[in-house]
Image (tube, rainbow over all chains, first blue to last red):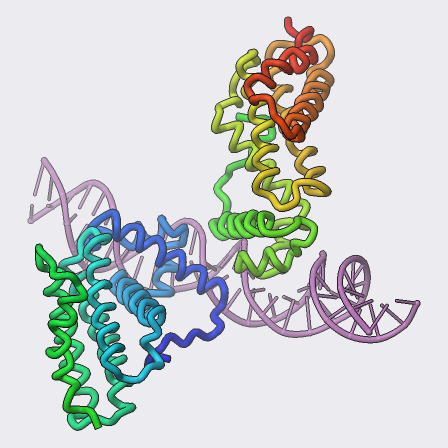
Length: 193
Length: 193
DNA sequence: TGATTTTTGTTGGATAAGCGACAAAGGAGA
DNA sequence: TCTCCTTTGTCGCTTATCCAACAAAAATCA
């Protein structure tokens, strides 16, 4: 399990349902128009949920977006079973791939992947990436504290992933990742036992 | 509007949502296994709704099935704008077509279109057909009471529609309907002004 | 057959969601 | 600037749903 993994406890079915409806409505709207111009009313109406109920679950739409991104990114991670794994070159490669593709997905099917939306996504993904790297590093012990190494690597990875997505004429993603693996690894390299 | 048309009033959103979830769950299950072997627990679990809540909406699964069929059949009728119309040969033809196709649909995507399921469907569809025919007949006045004529015609239509669906080697539905139009019409024929 | 398990309806108390209203903050246009 | 209008948070009160528990009916199996 990922550190800070969702409690996953048995929630009241009404709560799960309401959250699901809000999330689905939000996802739809975010594909239709600019994140900024999506109002909480829009979300509530689309979800068929009372506006007041929204506030019982999220303080504002930014919190909902954070929650959404965290959840989707974790789903990707779990799909590729990168959690509960030890550090290895293959796992690192897969993690980088996940980040690249996740950003690509967001860019392609969201109306406005830049601005506050982009900022929040960046923060969340780096946070999640860092968390995963830390669990890996803690298992093998690291010279500079795992926090330091994981921080550096997560920033580097996100930066490189974003750069690749910005390029008009992509290398193939596979080639690109082979090219940057050393750069990503250098942050973790000397922390091996 | 159809006589006995759904109130369509502004229901509590929770009620609409719960009904929708129950209906969707039921539809799924009915395609997966025999109607008889679908329990209320199955439906509740699949819908994510508490079992006790089911009973707040329907007395049993038969009532849910009735509700479902009535609703879907009405949707078909409204899609073809047969309601709010006067009696005419074209409208009668379209009505028969609707019944034939509706039975065909049920046969093709339901696991067990016979037994209690079939019986309930037959009852509901004849009921709806009769209601529609009565509104037509009441507009033009009829010699034997509209109830009588509509009853005869609705039974005849359903019987003929079922027969067509039973045949291994169908006529084309179009040809078949032309063939039976006179038989269906005879029940209404002499009620013209 | 009788024993065991599942399903069925129903209840009372707890809790989430709905509703209407409100003041405050923000945006758009005269 | 000043309106006008929309959105935003927040508040009591009402209502629908949840839950656990129960006895009775039905189904399953030895």
